[in-house]
Length: 401
Image 1: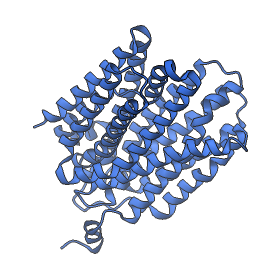
Image 2: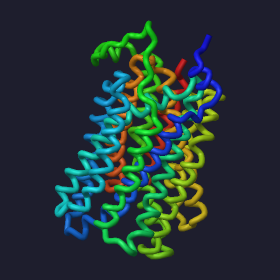
Image 3: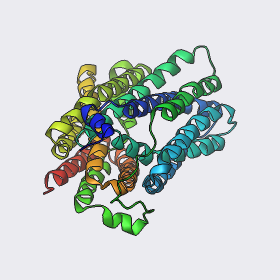
Image 4: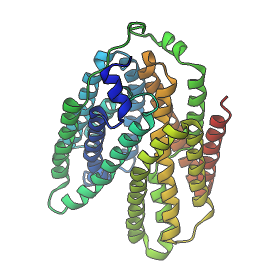
């Protein structure tokens, strides 16, 4: 017969652990997104060259991807999961706060790199703990809720900066980010349970790289192929802001067009947050694989919209941003929850790490290729490339037997 704890998991999905991880994601994203919103202006105030921001983001994202892969193997040890999460969230909070004391852009690069390594390394442990907080078949709801809270933090961060920048300096805003950053750590410490004990028939030994790869089933690698194919075309949403600014500039002028484009990006995040939980719950009911393919196809539709439409109509651009937000919600809610279903419990942490690393490499490739097509050919070429690979990813998922 199932134990009392197992019956509790089966009766509800919004457990204390799910709520704790959701609140942690909200506060952590609130903290670092508030800092990210003013980072370009802060670097400009220090007379940093334009390339500095690209170097900071590129190096930080690259180190984060490697940290995710290593963090996956750490997450296979149940007793290391919660300490790893605590250290990761604390590192991100403290290094974001430390921007206030940077006197040059290499110092910002150093703090950002350390924080993003902590952010990447904690991810697989957090995801493994989240999957353990719900019964099988409820992963979509749990990951959808976590993504909704995370995206809500991404909305609150820039909004807070907008309100605070009138009374605080750049450095003052960076100091303020310590408040939500430490709230994230406190939520994780108090509400999130430690790694659940494995059953007696599960291998509790530390896994090595080769044995971990062997223990991941063929279905997981097929799923990963679809995710990676989609990822090599899935560029950063900031390029949507740039494209909207270009389109609207002819009617509204550059400054006003940029402000409207940022508002459209805020709408993107609101749609993403609102859609994440319903999509995750739908995946639990209907099946995650085909639904994720639908999400990739919606992303292709959004990219094709930006490809073929170039009139300065805010309402139409809002539709494309909304579709892109829904696409992001499908991706964030279903990729991890499907990985949780496919990866055996004994190597689930490594599965999350490999998934995150594949997405990280895909993001790097897409940023380079789309940027090159955008600059070397035209923006339409970049959107066509992105739409094509989104459809390739969807096709691979649907071809899975």
